[in-house]
Image (cartoon, rainbow, N blue to C red):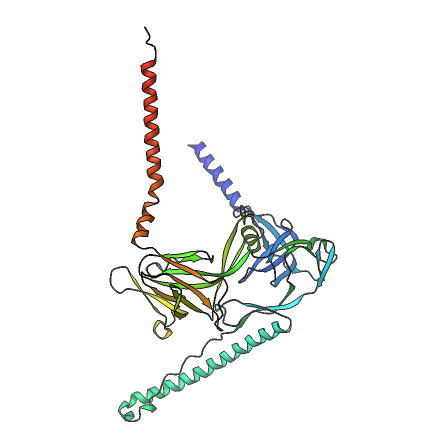
Length: 439
């Protein structure tokens, strides 16, 4: 009994020691990175253990060499930086080399991220220099104007409540004077435009290739950057059948057909897409992780970016244009009865109130006859390259063959197995009759 108690105590003490073991932090110079992924800017960093990082060509990126403390986190197998403990940004001229040739000498610039349609309203814009100061000032002015509207709204609400008290003292007195009945003032709208605080950093925009960066006379800041381009880019689609709106099909290739069965209603949402190398793209988003991108060095995939706006969808049947559709917001409401189900209705903020739309897209209604296709056109009626898609309707005969074809390999395999079994049995029988008898 005493021995068991000692063993339990030892296990408890060892477990406590393991839990209390904090990772060792090492002071070093890293490169803070804000890298554009085609839609947003991703934050990562380049420690001394990962001196090569990856960028998309033709886009603005932010580099900031910084002294901090780095530690390895074995649970996720990645290096992490403790900026709360130490965060000293280095100053100086950033030199950009290609091979042994000095291409550029960069100084830090003011920058800010502006959101013209609101923080959740689409892709941000990286603005620099005076434009960054102007964007931050514009946002500040809009916030101040909003608070002024709030003060005016509170005063108007006080007046409204006072007028309402007078109204309820003698409502009959307002007969024939309905326009004098007090109306509740509208709440002020929130600012739409948003901009982050102005910060400083080196803004880097390079063509495809391999480069070397470092702050002059600071060898610890030296890094290799691999700049790559998408293999292809173009519009892709989320295609939602009305019966399965939560499970959209993706279509990224112009040669891909969209298959339907019988009469259907589709909701089609277009987005901008990039076909990129899986390894480089994973490292762009999260560099100092052992597992990020592993196995994807030779693989490419389509990255879904922001949804496309200010476009129309042209629908063709048997090669003839039958409809031009506007993109709308849609709201999915559950049916009121006990049975599971839902209805997809056009989103109306007056009806749905503060509830957000479920999705945005083009509503396309198809019957079970003819050959359909669609494409996108911009505001000027120009066809957007790579947006054409063919819709194939699987009729009853096609469905029969679609069910039959997967059974053919099984049938052939069964026949082969029966044939080989019969041959094996025949050979065993021959051996038994021809073998000499033992006395």
